[in-house]
Amino acid sequence: MSHVKHDSPAQDAAASGAGPDVEVAIVGSGFSGLCMGIRLRQQGIENFVILEKDAVFGGTWRVNNYPGAACDVPSHLYSFSFAQNAAWSRKFPQQSELLRYTEKLVEDYGLLRYIRLDTALLAADFDEEKGCWQLRSSKGSFSAKSLVIATGALSQPVIPQIHGLENFQGRVFHSAQWQHDYDLAGKRVAVIGTGASAIQFVPEIVKKVAQLDLYQRTPPWVLPRPDRTISRFEQRLLRRVKPLQWLYRGLTYVLYEMRLVAFAKLPLLLHLIQPLARRHIRKQIPHDTALRSKVTPDYALGCKRILLMNDYYPALARSNVAVLTDGIAEVRAHSVVGRNGEERVVDAIIFGTGFDVQHTLGAIAVRGRGGSLLSAAAADGLEAYKGATLAGFPNYFMITGPNTGLGHNSMIYMIESGVNYVVRAIAMMRQQGLHSLEVKAQVQAEYNRALQRRLRGTVWDSGCRSWYLTKDGKNNTLWPGFSFEYRRITRRFDAVNYLVRKTASGKTSA
Image 1 (cartoon, rainbow, N blue to C red):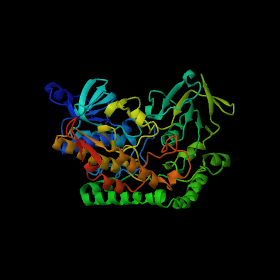
Image 2 (cartoon, helix red, strand yellow; image 1 turned 135 degrees about the vertical axis):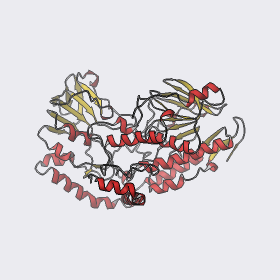
Image 3 (cartoon, helix red, strand yellow; image 1 turned 180 degrees about the vertical axis):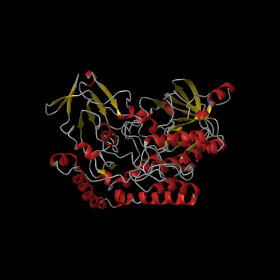
Image 4 (cartoon, rainbow, N blue to C red; image 1 turned 45 degrees about the horizontal axis):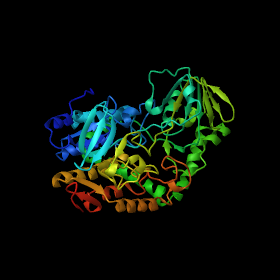
């Protein structure tokens, strides 16, 4: 579909000069932002905008378009309950199909006129007198009663600081910023990192490059992906028999949800699966014992994200691939030098080093009540209440904020839960004509103490270093329970836990 820019509701509201320019400003046009827009419209709230910093919308599945990009959650579960798709072509969706699903959401729910493309949020300041956010964007300034951050955790690519990288004369890019204009055929390529993206694009590019040097710090646990084509007959059946579509989705949800028992309740169960994972390595790398040793993790299965891929290990066993584990000392104009002193000539460097989940807003300056900076609150790892609201930041909401990530099921379920909670809060503000809502600091603190207690003893607390953890070892990324528990605590908006202000100077109530 065509991604054309339209005049935004903010422009119409600004012309009237009445109140904030928009009722809600949403930052991000991925699954979270689009879900928020859909639910606002269904609530009868039309005066909102969705800010998208790039020229096209789509979020994660537009940005991450590297070769082999796909989801490791089944298609029928990685879609909204209110917008199920019977036409998925594979059990595990590929990037192009997920992007088409996103585009269809925008078309079916009439969201295009709310999306402001090429509009990056640069700064946000809460106006305590007016009870709204003063926003500065790359296309000008405007005000919003509520600010909703829907950028997701995987929005800020990480490129590690490596001595001499700025002197490299070849191509350098991150997997989330893939340079499709660069032909890798016959090139000598260094891939740095072995995360979820790298294990997908390495098997694709290894077929065309002359040499691939894979710099691995810590090997991931990689299990087979039980992918398959979904036949036309199955698609027709699911389309025509709606209850069957719900049943299939429900059974898939239950199957994945039960994995939480092993991750968080009885981690010892994962030790029973480790021999199977080791056997998978032996089966796919049958002859090279040194390579098998390099790619076999020495930490508990599940401590880091478990990855699903069928052709990653065979790709590493190819004659034009070297797995290097000594680390990188420096980068020179045409080469990478390992800490063991070995210099290897390369034409391109590709980073598969993931994302900064601790600073998802990057350099955007967000100032709450009293001018307090969000970056200061997040210095030791951001905490929130129900992953949605922050003490000191009135009328500020997040979708899939701190401690809402899942290691066992679909994030789409969590997105729907969080969106419903936030929409209820905004609807309450509207109905009661409130100045602001702000979670009580003690409520947020008690909530997070309970979360951290629940995370103790889980497999994510078993000692490995992962992107789930802050530099101090605190897990402020994952939800420690069943996803339906999060659905339960977000089912209604609990105003009793908030400072509810009717006027800027008025007394607070609950």
